[in-house]
Length: 104
Image 1 (cartoon, rainbow, N blue to C red):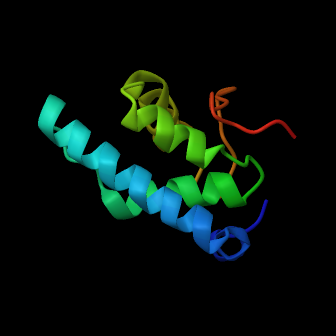
Image 2: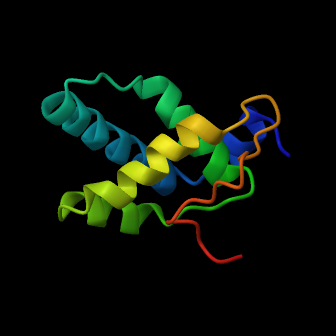
């Protein structure tokens, strides 16, 4: 698995912008609906590591779905990645696989 720096360098500027927009929207939603603060930097790094490190995500579809109200599926992926990402190896553990993973 690549290091975080390698994963981050493999993410396009457009995908990086989608990650930022998605995490910001998710942060506001979690704060307003559940009074939970999401660590923006950690969540951005987690999504970047997964997306650039071997499990590309359909980021545009995630953002579109989230903005259209499908918050549960997007939340499943963001929260699941946060719980199941081994930050040392960059691998997803416990057989977790994001719903928005692109076909390989």
